[in-house]
Amino acid sequence: MKFLIVTGLSGAGKTEAVRCLEDIGYFCIDNMPPTLIPKFAEACFKTDGKIDRVALVIDIRGGEFFGDLFESLVYLKEHQYKYEILYLEASDEVLVKRYKESRRKHPLSPDGRVVNGIHKERQLLKDVRQRADHVIDTSRLKPKELKDEIFKIYSEEGRVENEFAVTVVSFGFKYGIPVDSDLVFDVRFLPNPFYIPELKELSGNDSSVREYVMGHNVTKEFIAKLSDMLDFLIPSYIAEGKRQLIVSIGCTGGRHRSVAIANDLFEKMRSAGLRVNIDHRDITEDIHRGGKKL
Image 1: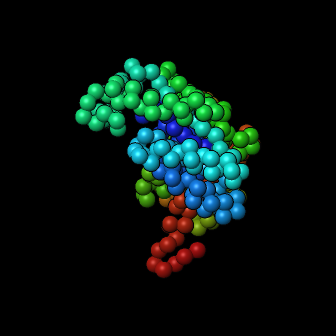
Image 2 (image 1 turned 90 degrees about the vertical axis):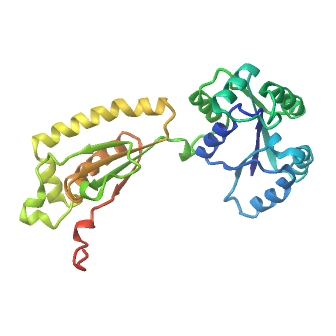
Image 3 (image 1 turned 120 degrees about the vertical axis):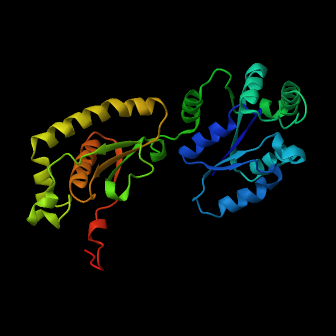
């Protein structure tokens, strides 16, 4: 089990750092009183490995409890719990600017000048900074660049949490567009199997429906253009730090065309080595009528 103590100056980016750590599988707690670290470590140990990487944000917001940090670190060392300290800082000018933009008060200068609070905080954190395993100056870092730095230091090779994930969702427009969609594509222009008697009661998961939908030239052209668009977009999303993409494919009822197209897209992405999931949201909705359920 590994503990990561995330600390540093207020406004230096600890919140963004914790979000990154959560993405790579850390169990994160913000503003934990240091005096509770020993009991929390014991509780984590009793999970038999279910909680094996923990990030604790501990800073001067803890007030008088902050002074207990070093005593708790001694406890971790004596009981052979591995820990590291990540310290985030930034220049006075950058921190003042961030506080002015957020209109928040500095915790050590609630009624006075922000710069005075920053100076007090630097002095209080001097010892913990000296003991830090990693110090990151975020003065010139954009959020994406801070993410990259965190991933570079703390991600573990082979962890699926680090991979970009795509979820392909099929849906029916008459039931509403999925609220978490990033990209939405309307395939209601494609020939509709609903009007073919032998296909009406089937779904896009059935081979006969799939062959009907995919057998038209307009479908083949659409798939080619859609694949080309996603081949362009996905690397750009990854470069910007996006970790998940929801691609929603919609037809009228969400049973035939959207399902067939979503399945085809899913297979192409999987073959390309992407981490991809599929969800046919409305595939059974049209047959929940009058007590009849397929």
